[in-house]
Image (cartoon, rainbow, N blue to C red; front, side, top):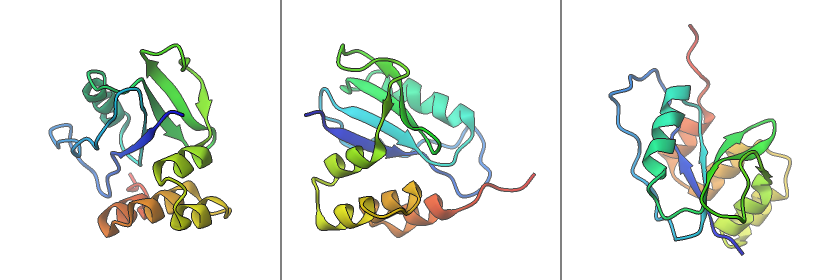
Length: 134
């Protein structure tokens, strides 16, 4: 069973490319890292560049319409373009804790599920924030 790790790069207000990415979570060798959060496309590119040298077997970007889409891999277990079910990733990440089970079994949006996993007010707030109007 592959371990999944969520890496949130969400922002709650407009930022510039000079703003640093959040620190990387602990990444076990061979894990799948799912990058998620409302952020400019260039921030996703920066995250991919940062994660390329990590011990992860694959990196996926979360798309709310599809799920987590694998964008880079060093393992035959994963294929670029493969869509990963976020619900099962949620269960793996939280090790089926009662909090995650309750969140995953509901029909709540994924950002609410992730907020319940993180149990961090700042992350939850960032996940709830709407993108700024232009």
